[in-house]
Length: 228
Length: 228
DNA sequence: CGCTGCGTTGAGCTTCTTCAACGATCGTGG
DNA sequence: CCACGATCGTTGAAGAAGCTCAACGCAGCG
Image 1 (tube, rainbow over the protein chains, first blue to last red):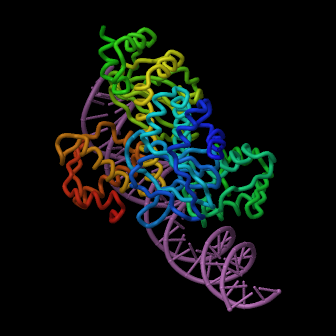
Image 2 (spheres, rainbow over the protein chains, first blue to last red):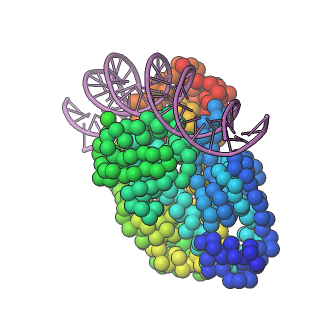
């Protein structure tokens, strides 16, 4: 069955028995969202969580004035909004598909049931939440203690480590979205890209960034150097 | 045994059998830290986690220039640095005792062992981590989308909800620490307290804050109003 | 009694945002 | 196939928020 195959590719479910995957497949809802479509809103009751199968989604907060702060951008295989399952609360943020996306929705009760029976699932879940916590801690640190150029430099280095071609990387989201992820606005981000290029740190061609001076970028990232 | 009694008071361990508490008591290390003493540093190997028994500790990040961002302030009964246990990583932040504190250190392996055997412990842990995630998401939102007066107003309202006397609250940490928790510096915090007092929102007498205009404070918190 | 840590206040400056305008790109419909 | 609009990215000028540096009062404690 096709659904099982997708479930088996989700790291969170690694180590589950076939029977348990079957159980999941029985209770999940297969959903599709178009680009820009909202998956849930902040305050919606968290009666379950999601696994992204294909596409790309963002989790974000909104201010009164409509400014957005992205918390996560998720790709295929990643679960999202799991925390709401355990806290029993409503979703603490918004979720929207950045491109056409397919997601599985797993209702809370069935999942809670399964997790008490499967220690490996519980361990996977805790490992996943630990990673999130660590990532959030890093974001808080960045937002509070570092300036935008430093945050951007860190992110570029992070991206380059993720991707194969060491010194040439692809932004996987639009620059406007990247600005929101960095905790700033497109104008500011654009100016910083311009400065980084002018100073020979990078070469920016649309969504492709070439790293010219990696050491310099690393110095920027830790805050040892300031962008002039 | 005195240690068991303390363990039983920790919400995380609620639902554990006596035998399991005994096991924990066998493997934990009872430690004491004086005011200002470091419990662990960022990058230290996370070979276990802690439960705070008495006292008060902070978890924080440091910038190169020495500025500090507090992530948590914990009181008795709260576990900390659990995430390191599951991610298997080193600690992603610093921990320091704000006052003389007693903590239990629980080594990783023993705890991992116990958690696979006890679904209720796993559920408690996941609930706890969910709360942390939600709190962090709120902090990120605040830091990125709100100004300091708004953050402070939120915090004051939060504190007043925690404490008994509705319109008079006690700051449980120093103002310098509060500044670090709000993601700012003491000077800025001080000016904002002064403005809030001048505008009749609060009356500030050392660590005691009287809320004069709660509605106004709530408007500040959501960002509907700006502090002049 | 002096010292140290904490909080406050002032002045100047940096960073970032806001507001505005404009160019480029892309998809769509005529 | 072209024209159009919408979205996205860029750039400029001005303003606001918060930080740095410096000085000082005050309280607590040795």
